[in-house]
Length: 559
Image 1 (cartoon, rainbow, N blue to C red):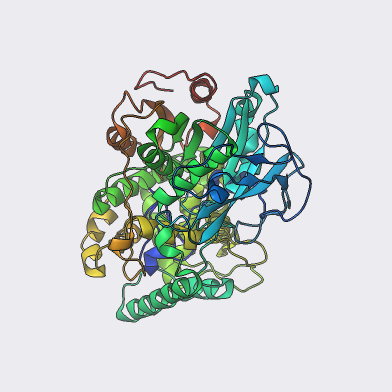
Image 2 (cartoon, one colour; image 1 turned 120 degrees about the horizontal axis):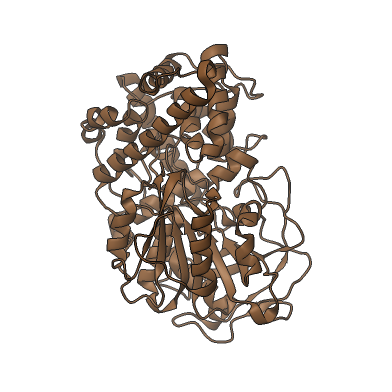
């Protein structure tokens, strides 16, 4: 799972919402690796005009032919009007490339705001699709993606990532994704505006450790929560993972698919497991890659993730020392490199580095930590981290690290933030509004710092959870994962060097779902967050066989 560290300054993704010096760093960069390595782009606004396109069975639009249990027919039998996609909006995460190509179609699904009151208010769910290139006779159906977070826009993420899934498209799948409720253009949660977000990010440079900094953090907490409540208060209790799973089943129904074929990554694995629990008879071919840890114990989860990020950092430091020699800014000794990096971050709390940012932003400790965490998601981005550290250590400037942090937190070149931070907080706190007091969290700081001198202090801060969030425990629906009656096995994929969703969590999710017979585990001995896009032929072959033919690998298979 992905805890958070500060507004726009998270460490991992997909975790719990956190108190301000933790909470506002929430986030969900659905395609962190693609963003950092190649510039994640694409996406769409909800279309208001454009070329109409055929639905799954032909015609200008697709419509469910049968009613959906418990819903009025205007929802259960609604029509999807697919049209040319527009460019992604600031809430989704703008793209310098603009709109995706003509092969992409967008539509809007309407769902109940409150699934317990389906006759009441509704909200829109933004959709995107690329049709299969296979002949109609070989078409399997739709393959629905969630790329993680929570808070990542599937509409903005799928187009730049689609090449990675080309064999699945050619094999008979329409590639489909969506902005989950509360995300992007699906009634996106809105909290602070862009200027206020920048101001808070610059104002508090590190984890508060003085009375003055604690007071500042508390004030920022109050400002942030008040903004969320003022702008999105009615929505906040309804953005649970369970409600998104219900939206996803309605999407399956309206698309005309008997079962949901699904590919979930990072937080998307949690969503997929919750879906299987709620709709076991509707589970189709499913892959959960980068499996989150379902353990409800905050301390255990935070400890595991601290270990995961430290492991990835150790691997990076060894690579830097070996590959770059004298050019490695953290030196030739990986162990000493940890202390060098921790020292850099400590120095940035007192003296942030200048950058060439037109808005005058400086590189603070929390922004630099965000950049380090972002670059650890994939070994393909390690060279960017080396460049950024060279600038910071040797030149006293912070441009590259600021750039990496902006990519990770969804800030575009015009200073506009996507809503992934706000959505991450809202979804995590709707799922579980609990947390520790700052004093209780501080008690774990020494233990976590012993695990990681770089991440430990910040990870301890995340333990304060959702303190003060305007959703009560009585309004939440905590995720449940048991799915022993699933109509099809759920293939779990876990990477041994994954920093954000450490490998050990996959075994606990397997047990929570129902064991190896329901959720076999494929292990990938490698680096990075998620395995399918690593380029490993073994992983790709096993996953493609499962999705295209239903072949189920033996539990414990390793690549």
